[in-house]
Figure 1 (cartoon, rainbow, N blue to C red):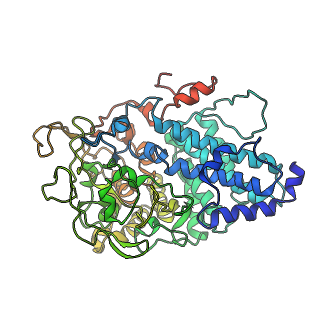
Figure 2: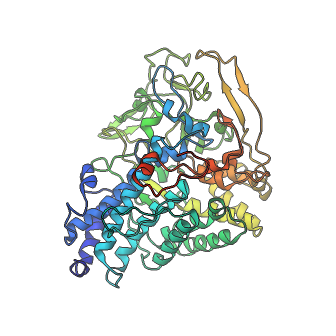
Figure 3: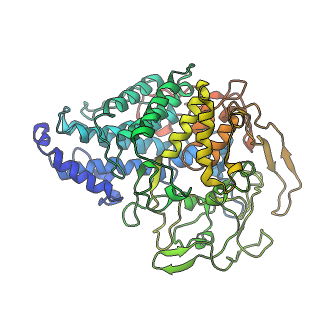
Length: 569
């Protein structure tokens, strides 16, 4: 089988490129769960190409699906939440993500674990069928290994101690062994390092290339200390080397408009290094807008996507923005909403028409759909329907969206390269003015006033302006704000707190914040993620919460798995 396949590597590479570079796949969504070594001919290049498509599809599901990694990674941070929605009747299942009191039965844990390992299985099947590396199959094998390593990168980030499975050629009844975080880390770094000079420099949308691998390595190195409990600067030095390669050789650049990397189609965006392609026909799977908006709220974009009125901004985070920061309105839907104006088929100008009436109880006081910044609480009593700003950073395309939207998702972008370099320099204590200049460069497109765009070394090394502390209203009634439960902690004790603020404003909703909060520390040595209170989440010293528990279904299916420290099985 393997000898036959080696003769057809070029054919498969062409087929896989057709699946990815057009921004869609030609596979029906229900095909991926049906493909296995009993139902697919692994000697057939077309069917093997479908397996690779299955791996890519599972990567998309992992990031963008309902109860996906995006929910798990975003709704536990100080930027977003899904509160119990009063009179809407849902949201209670996400309260524990905000409060950091989840257990191993959380649905998003299971989805994240399952999609990651399904993708790994597909990758292993392709690699097994291809056989040993040869000059002819090296580049395609590197593409497959890139996706497999990305799955493990995310598993390490979220779970740390996971099984490492690198082949599907196992005996019946085989159960993989669980590896510790350091072994998983070393495997992922070794994989990325080995394929870096094999995968090529070609910028083919939806694929990785050498610069995407450099970026993934930099992410690994940046978080080494936080993930493995290490000290020292080796990781930041190594990250800086990878980032400089992208800067010097990648040919990427900042887009002139902050919103450009978040449009429906970003295949030509100058700052996108690696992305998840989607289209309206086959791969519409971005559920962000369904979590955030009521159904009537999507009429502001001319969208037919489903809206369930759930997620919203944490009010304290909104208070950190400079009111002149153009990223604020580009990221969040605020205030009274207006109907979209239709210009042509699937072409709408958002929020350009008449105000949208609110046909339930008018809790805004205006008679129209109006998103208010303040939110009562996560669960006591919860949030009323119009409370909380809604994320619309990713374009919500007008027209028929078949339940979910098809916006491409940028996983790595050049802006992050510049900000990561700035962080490395500050942590290494050298070229600090260069670090400040890099952050200023990123901010310049967000401010018309150059003075406001400028950041100094002192700004970045100072504390955060986030008013951390418990902050909720427990009084019942949409106009009753009388009972305010609040404490104040502030952010002056956060090391490099100013830089953390800038990362927050730039990378909202990009699976960035949790990783940053775990990496940044308070002067007590505990991560911001654990130590700080915000909205209804209280800070504590439970550092084991930086890692999620192994999902219940995984524990039941593999008796070799041991639950992560701090969690009961």
